[in-house]
Length: 313
Image (tube, rainbow, N blue to C red; front, side, top):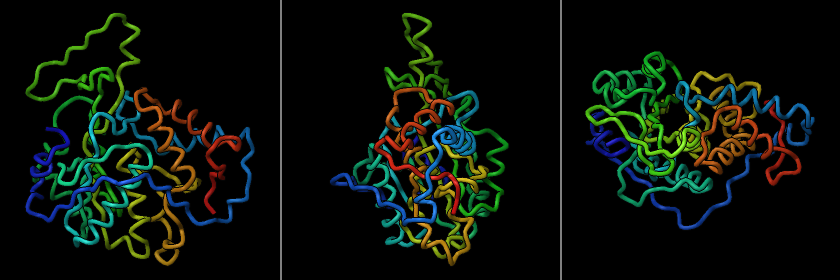
């Protein structure tokens, strides 16, 4: 079953200590990042849409010819392995809180993880070993549900401090059923009464995410910062090769010298606007241009969201 514990057992990780996410008892206000030199800089209204479009075009990574996927039809259950119990629980609690902030439902304690965070001394060795041992756990053989063979090779071999692999599914928003044929199953049936219904009914749902963290590359940052980074790449389809140097985002965290990381903050206003708009319209098929429109509205000075400059300090 996609997203179930059996999927992770296929990776040979079942024997490792596994923590599962508790359900937050109340909504917590997201922690604001520390003030930065750009906080008082006003973005010219006419420039904001272009800046947001550039940001979305850079970071969004929907599967080919699909919309941007997000968690929808199943609850998110976060697990962490190959790290000390207290470290695992700290990360899980933080990522679960971020999920709750954006209305992403989390599973009960003891749930079967569909977001798995794996600690590693060498991320590439861990990724390549898991992928070689159980390739079908990553690429299950259905059409357009992952980023393809070239992206899989980069996942296995890159020197990125954090790498992630996602399985998403085109889904009938009326029934919650997949609309692609899965290996060993019959083709799906969709009952429609007019052709115009089809495009509006199909959304893209995340089903499984694996995140490998190279802890040797995480020096100088807090668990809250690392949790924010993991949440961003686990709850949205983010391009691992995005160049975000011109934008204010948690995705730049590992680009800073270790000595500067602790004061850099976590999720920024732009990250929060990206996640909030993505999940406010979860029954809609969101293409990047639509995501940019929604995010621009959220970031305007007269919106509830605070305004921010897209440039890094």
